[in-house]
Image (cartoon, rainbow, N blue to C red):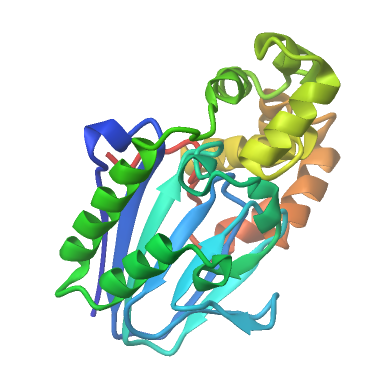
Length: 265
């Protein structure tokens, strides 16, 4: 039996947290995942996920940074996992360190040496149930956001808002919107989002193509044009890069879903 559910964050946390999700299953798990453009905190309250592409098992408390490759998530069952999905530029508000440290990595959260964070992880992993675990996470996040010195992500947020509306926007224009030089903007963006602006734009464009397929579009030339790819061949190459296969084959493998551009609520 499998139960998957989304949880809406506290109103104060919504500028930083997109949503929480909980998975409870006794079934074998083998799912293809793509770059979604959003860092995550992952708490495995029972068995952990194995990532064959990284040849590693996720830690019981794991931090997943920005990635630029597809990966399979596998588990033999007995899963109870709680995940915090941040907005692309917001995880630094919790850790107050450059998120670029997590690029293309699954980090053991305990390895950061943050005493308060380690206590949170212990409490979440030993909570009565997943709902209590999320309540503990929210109290922790609210306390961290109240601290002085939390990273100001407003400039990057403005540029991301425009990128999501128009994924053909140039890095120069994104920098102008953030009132920074291109060099300054690339540094600030990389530290806040964990990926360089041009590469992140490519991930966002791929996620936009998934949204069009999710909504029923099967005209790959039209998807390429709508998302700003040079042509259909360019779109197919980028799809293969981020999903490991072509759009046509991807449609056969599993239901299409754009994590970045779809709200579960």
